[in-house]
Length: 360
Image (cartoon, rainbow, N blue to C red; front, side, top):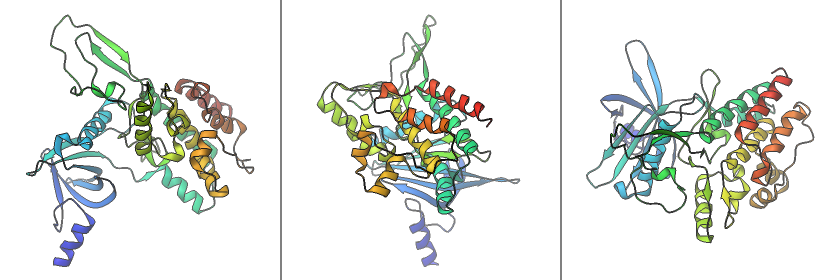
């Protein structure tokens, strides 16, 4: 029996060693089934809740904050939670419930209950690569259009404000030093407050097949909003450039990272076009099994950073199953200069037109 309890503790770190571990979130019990993944101070578990008629599955993300509210991971987790509530789109994941636990030593645990998806886009691609097969063109375009629609909700996000509302700290240039204001200050209740909608573009910042989940109906859903933040950043000096570059190194997966984030220039204007570059890499991966720069690294031993900075990639010669219009979408996204890439509205319209012309 002791061996069984020990095994449970090994499989389910950060939870008590119980034969049937469970956790209560806001007066609702969830049975912990297994650990799905971990990284840093974060753990993701498969959990379930059972009623008389059915059993439902969820993903539970637990973020440990050893230094409590002063911990940077605590502040980042609160911003991640706000992102799960910020965007109203079927193509972007939303959280179901949250809970902040306080420990006796002053540390905090943040629990985020999320929908559970059995497979990611990366899982599908991996299966196809193992079987020496490729995704159907129609399926690729369907997923790509869905991802574009999710990104449009981020890039075209509008915040409702009043003339008495302050910008919250993550509505500023969050990658640069800001004040310690609370994330949002409620209006003071003045009936004369004027409501306005302010455009505040957000970027996902870590768009890749592993962060696109597929629902039971096959709908692509953008997940992992921990890197999502305000898109537009004005870099004023070298120190700020290094701050942005450090953020990108930590949060933006290199094979999908835009060149302006690989080497951030002083006086650079970072925009949501970083996601457009990542979209091009994602579309390429759907077609050929790898991101364009991973493929070059694997086949030719190319330096990944240098290949990205030079925009150096190749369309495989055996691309006959893909219409030139689909290949052209990849090329439009992978323009070295951000201003030469389409914005999300242009790209979505172009993708819809390609799908229409190909009768997909």
